[in-house]
Amino acid sequence: MKKLLFTIGLTLPTLFFAQQNKCDLPKDYQEPKPDKKIQSFLKRGDATIEDLRKHIAVENDCDLKDVIFLRISEQKGNGMYSVCVAGKPMKYKRMGTVFMGAEQNPFDTVSK
Image 1 (cartoon, rainbow, N blue to C red):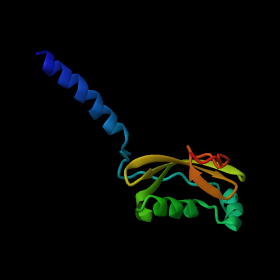
Image 2: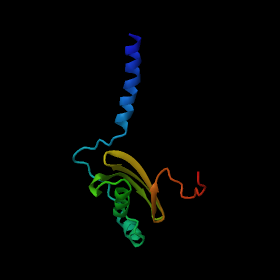
Image 3: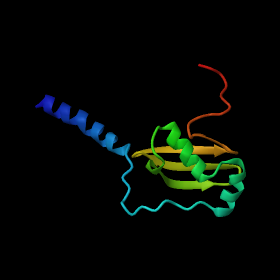
């Protein structure tokens, strides 16, 4: 009986956390629309939403259609993006015209 409870206690949280790492979007999901003024400004430096979509697709080795924006928060100088990439939620940021993962630090130059 103890082994059964131990097994259930071990597998249940694992299954719960495994489900948290997926994007479950409805079939009629509409991506948020970016601000047209900001996008036209960012077009000069190749830093638009479509440029980010291409960057993410190349970085994660997937198709452009597999990159779905969940949340867009941007200004002219920076931006934060929540994205679903082939069913996996990810976050990206933009500093100026440079895209990177949300956890990356562009100023960390010390090699580990």
